[in-house]
Length: 282
Image (tube, rainbow, N blue to C red; front, side, top):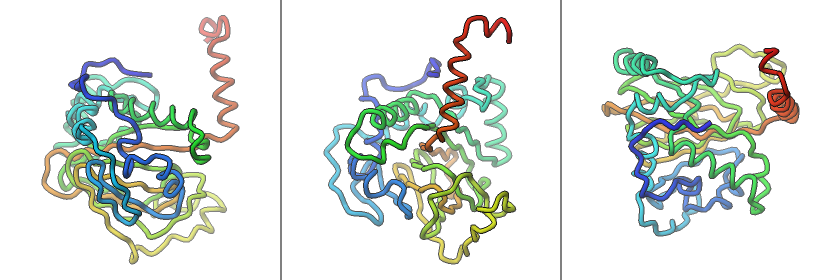
């Protein structure tokens, strides 16, 4: 659900679209050549420099994408962003919650992981990606997109790092403020069913056979404001906040594919919620 809280977004700026944050603004090529492949790719949302990929000339844009992104996420105001996020229970964060989280960030160096963000910028990115996925005939890979969330990470200077792990979803992360080093392995296995930390014991037969790689061959990509990185599912990575900037904020677009069983459960739940008298019986 959209949150209607007040924010400082500039209504005169054009709405954000998922293509705005992709290399060269070329959405079909990104999904055809990068999406789901066994390598990491990084680029800048404001410039044509693109690391390790074909250099596409970026379309001339009259607006500054980074400025629009910052505006869409409350210009890095921790309290304002937190109050437009949701908990896993779908409950809102109160002003007291926001104050407590901000204190843990500033005094304890904890990273705030807020995976369900509903600022104006978050909703524009999510809705545009879902619209493209459900209406585009340009690439078959878009047909697999049916589970999209936009989250944010706030980190303190020299704060706690995210240790080696992989996710079972696609990650597009854009740095808005501050600097982070992304340590990634040269390749990975995108066919994983769950996320895993490198120090976690195996939980099933697949993970027992999934050999944890040596980090000696890890590559490091430094994300400064305006830089973005794509990490496929199953790709080992480690994220370290660096620099002395007081505010380190990154936006994470997470994309997964819901299983057929989950779709059935969601449909049944939705139908039952609309059944007459359900709330009275609950």
